[in-house]
Length: 450
Image 1 (spheres, helix red, strand yellow):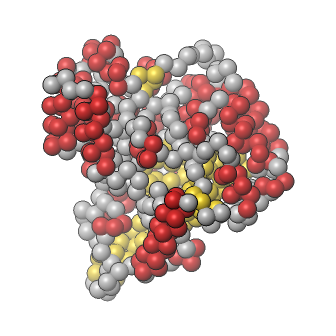
Image 2 (tube, rainbow, N blue to C red):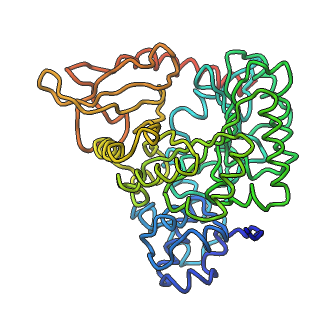
Image 3 (cartoon, rainbow, N blue to C red):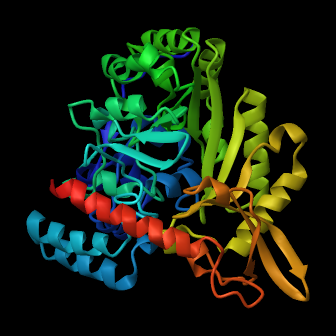
């Protein structure tokens, strides 16, 4: 029987007083965590600390790397600047000003999130929604813009640093619902954040139940992007509204919608606890589909064996491996990123180890400005070694499944660092993409200022 547990959060102010840190880390190591956490968001909870981290394997434990800040996440100049201020007892305001300058250099919103992905309706920006691909809209509930714990690699880190200008969230007017109603090409709505599963049951109902009305019949699939299964599985087991959440999910499916939990699982160890296994069983018992995704992350899961084992565990539990992403070009990317050449080999080696049931994960995939670009393979064509690339999704649907080629190299970590193969000056989509981005930027500025 799973005993109930009350969540306890640990933030920046708790780092120096956390008993487990004082037992396992030196004063200098604790200070390093504080320095980096003054720039990038830090939050964890008692489940992660007590049940997931192997405190006998610090600092190499993958869950420790996943949740606790590491010195290498800032470059030496950035680290030294904040460390000096902390040691000098600088004011909170002074540290915040220095931290904000560093954040601005960390590409807080990659791939056009603040402009190219934000829709316009009635000549106004629609708050808290992104619509990059025709069939899919992302909704950022205002009450779901935090998490049970923050991942150190998170590409949405800017949501959590307290700067309103860097934050996505719906307003209280529900204009996003009108947008969804009008755009009948949208079949899939992904609720994301932050983490929608931090919301109370009434808040979840306020966002989800309206989509069951006839005016939203064109919306067939509802997705919830969440790390709650890994970071707080009690949400679906013993929390006071756990039963209500399961009933809500059942109601959605009984209304004819497909409901998918897009579970963020970064390492197989997250799947080992009994409460996680029970949470998965309870979700599956009411018919929820659980699809899993993660970026490939240095220090955490940069091993084919780790991925193969993680996929095996997921399928054994009834989860569906969905994506292996490439770490995005934001935040502490230089600490976490992996060259595309290495990423493809890790994916290929993991793929070779598993059966067909585990081979549903697509990767390595870059969620880049033109779309979801997958490295299909490495080939030699007319004597030139190349990356074979493809788009699984694209701003222009005509770009999808149209193979293109980049020169092979062993250092590039992102699409924009690749060079077209065969003497081409640019990739086939670049001119059209530039026109689209300029138009979107112009519309966004106009909609923001009206």
